[in-house]
Amino acid sequence: MDTYCTLHIGFDDTDSPKGMCTTFLAYKIVNYLKKQKSEFLDFPRLIRFNPNIPWKTRGNGAVSLKIKTKNPSKIKNKIKKFVSKYSDTLNGANPGLVFYEQHDIPSSFTQFSELALWQLINREQAKTFAKKNNLEIFYIGNGQGLIGAIGAIGYKFQDHTFELLCYRKSSKFGTQRKISHQSVKAMQKRTFPYTFNSYDNKKSKVLIMPHSPDPVFYGVRGEKIDVLLNATKILETEEKLAGHLIFKSNQGTNDHLKNTFTKSTMKPFASGIVSGSVLDKPQITKGGHVFFSLDCNGEKINCAVYKETGITHVALGLIKEDKISVGGGIRKASKNFPRVLNIEFIEIISIKKQIIKSNPICNRCKKSMKSKGTKQGFQCVKCGSRSINKNNIEIPRKIEKKIYLPDVGAHRHLSRPLIRLGKLNKKSYFDESSSWFSIYKN
Ligand code: ATP
Image (cartoon, rainbow, N blue to C red):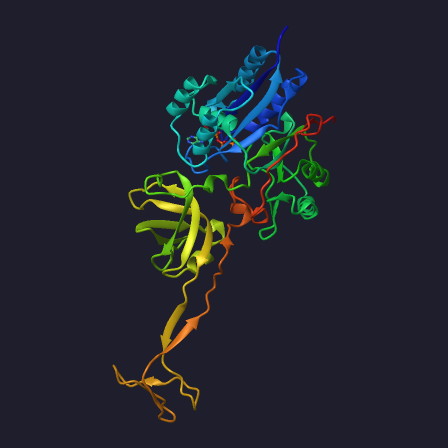
């Protein structure tokens, strides 16, 4: 008699800027597995990794599934075919697929996954890891996708969010998406604070719809699956959609900014945080970007705050000796520019008093006194009163002791939004019968 086994399936790098999407492949695979009556043991997982690696298509996302099956060989063969069919290899995708046939995931997998969140991993490292750990691998091209595929299986949630992704009918792929902006605004308002980053009120912009020609129509991010399902009922689209899949994800958790950079880990394309004291007056470029440097335990770190983040005014408000903590990704040095930390948030830890010296004010006439020359003191031109020293004047600071985040439109998938500050989702209840997957009947 056949016995059941637990099968973990991880895949990545199936899309290109010209088409397809790894989550759409997941939707197709889930549909197949459901038809095979495979039992799902958890939500499909959409795990975002280091957003600063240079070869990602969009948000550096990979997917994993955990199922119970009697026939793993048949399933593996079929999924290999799905990966070959739904990968945009002609336009640069390097798909990676991994299978792991054990119920529990070893801690070495989790460690691999944690490193992929903020470091640059070599694909040969992934291949060696797979060999050493009895992972079955399948790849096309150079196998870059194996990093995300292994990482997605190994990932352990400390906090999570959900995303409901709604897919288009294939006849609509590549055509313009049309959604009522009012309905997105209304959805955001009615589901607050259980959904996030759906509509940018400041710029009147819809944030749930991609602009690339992939099969996704929209994705609603939030804390609970029932809220996401309700959100889809509020949204009004011009076309009939094909179906949806809800993913459990590390989006909105700041997962890539948990480690503090050291001198040895501050390498190009790595993500992390540093704390230090502002070394110089921030400078603004013609394009509106702001540059300054930090002293972090004697190490000088060049920092850049780009105009698009909407927080250049905060950077410009910094003065020498303010203490701050910043997070972001390391940009490689070029011929004309040094290595720079591209900032994704600024936390003001302590604010230096800003004092300027000015000529004293005459007590009687309330007028500013005039200098009598070097070391000669000051005198009121009206009544002749004299004073020796200049006055100290404290200039009010424009920044406060708090965290400044970029505008929502400039958020990365992993960025923790303001409404999620201090929020941790530890447990999620998976119910196989709930509507986390649906093919619409229309
Ligand atoms: P989408 O968000 O639309 O799914 P994407 O942005 O995830 O696309 P991919 O086409 O999947 O882009 O490319 C990301 C590639 O980077 C994958 O091959 C993945 O395995 C690899 N990768 C992920 N994390 C790292 C890392 N830390 N170091 C090196 N490579 C990585």
